[in-house]
Amino acid sequence: MPSVVVPSLISSMYGHPNDFSIYINEVEYPAFVYLNIKKRVCQLENFEIRIMDVISTDANIQYGNTIKIFAESKLILKGRIDSAKFQTDGICVVKGFGMGIMLANKEYTLRTVFNDTTVNIVNYFLSLNNNSASPFILNLGTIQDFGEAITFRNEFDKDRKSTRLN
Image 1 (spheres, rainbow, N blue to C red):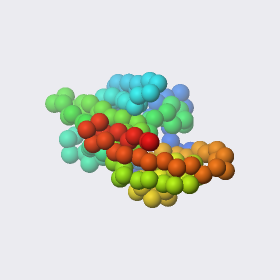
Image 2: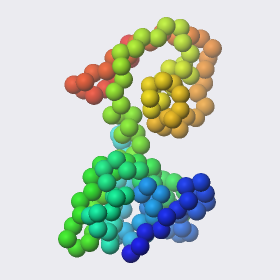
Image 3: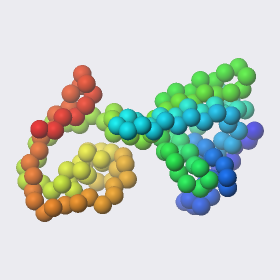
């Protein structure tokens, strides 16, 4: 089944009435037979999808590519592909995680900040390039800044792949 290219600037073009839709790198994959999304408290979102009529040379279905899943026109998951296994019957099993995986895998350098605002600190952790500026890994909502400067120090623990704030 041919894929349909979707304009990235027109968000109203995503989704279909009374149906789920899957887009990988802005290309729709309408022929899927299985969709499982797991959203649990304090865990990364993950998904598994079985897509029909795709071939192993499909450049969109690869590790690290962006996937968007819609219920009607509402985005219910945006994530990254972790694995794609092509079967001999023309079905591809795609597994991955929500965009939080980028934050979980991000390595931070040792940094101590004195007398900075909470807005700048949150921006540092969520910025893709560790520079407190966009692009951000996650969309920023309203950050309450209480006007007081705080001091913090973070360390990256390579064994645990986690950041610890002191």
